[in-house]
Image (cartoon, rainbow over all chains, first blue to last red; front, side, top):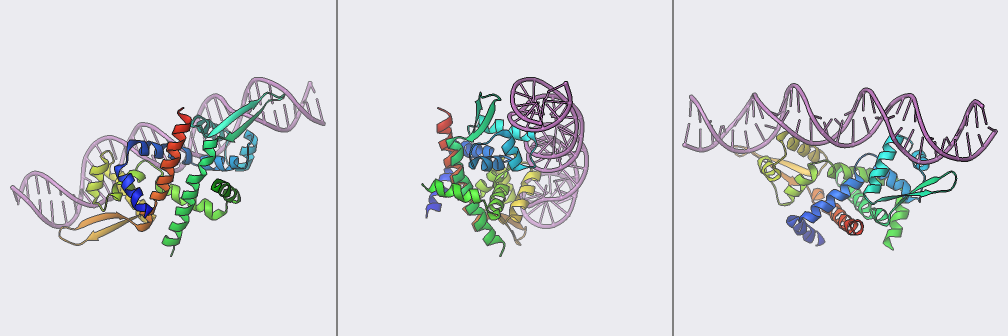
Length: 118
Length: 118
DNA sequence: TATATTAGTATACTTTTGTATAGTAGAATG
DNA sequence: CATTCTACTATACAAAAGTATACTAATATA
């Protein structure tokens, strides 16, 4: 089984694996990061668009989270100097690839529900 | 690409996917859950063993987290009525499978580091 | 010139999460 | 019978995460 390999890999648990997992957790955990990423999966968006999209998020939180995601290389902020200026947010290439993690989470979560909600 | 399929799946984003992701996040986020799971990947352990294994965790946190993980069907607590009684913690089958999620996180995290730390 | 829109910031607050420190009950060990 | 070990619990506190509400600067629109 491929599971066996993974277990032994984790058992060695090299530092870089731990760091990688932490990086990933920083991008997906918290109340608003995934909703923001999900919103950007539909294409580039302006601040206001994301805010309307998520509805309950305050501008303070949206601003804070976007900054963090940008710092983490998941989101890109582009200023177009039209008049008036527009600012657009997109996922980076790496940001889009986080979907593989979400896929794994969906799979485990659904499987787990099947098992525990018998 | 299999990425393309995933994106369209998320775009539909059925409620059950959202629930599944939340379930998964509940199991992996927080400061101590992954260390505890990792410790149990090495085999069944007693309270004291896990505590020694993680070193900085307080008994309060360990107790609280173990209860939550048990409630979430990730960890199993078994009382052996030898004298004195021993209590052992193990991962459930489902709990072991969370490794697939960790694998995805390791992969994304390492790939992402390669891209951002140029 | 008054009002609206975009892209936020500022301040104060509440809630959640985690820490520090001490204590307990039951049994075993010297 | 005093001490130690296991598996915790209790209380108080600190720090991090999130909320509520109001405000601003630059431009556009009526």
